[in-house]
Image (tube, rainbow, N blue to C red; front, side, top):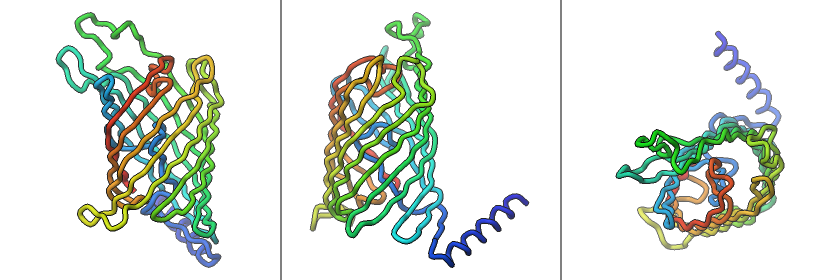
Length: 285
């Protein structure tokens, strides 16, 4: 009964809006805001091999637009974000042990506006982030946490507002973006509540070259962000790679990655690291 009522209401709203040049769609095929490849706090699916430590950064998750609304030159979406990334290590003869993990879940709203051949976007994300040590950080022979590192009850509930501008928005595109975030809840209390980031991403289609009839795109992506211990710290992450498939749709990217700053896993947030990585990631849309 409730499902029928909701379906009827949705149909009536859709009929009303369609008569007023407004189109509503469920589960749009293409993401309104394409996640930035150099930003670790974005949903992705893939593996990054960390050369210096011989470990793996494993990403599992996705971003999905649930509702799309088109009106005049604007396109708005509401979506959900569920993702996590983990550190996989090897010790005591055991391979691929999950040492630590960061999990995120929440939602986002995006408004895009086309300006001739460009596109301007505003995105608001509201996310919960928590961090955990896992069984790969536990030494069974001594029944203790490895290196005397005990779990930190790390939590961050935050809202993030991002402004982005896409120059070109076609076979060649330059995206510039900046974000400001505020955390309504943080643990430990020493972590700053206000954070920010900025970056760019440039991609170009390789003309007259295909793989199994799929496009090839090369790209450069850099992400600069403030992180926090008991003070603000400046961190950077850069990535260069090639994506097989249409840049705005499904495909797989192979890349080289360089990261410098506070450890990207929140259980180690007070440590400073410098990592070179080789990896791949899969774009669902």
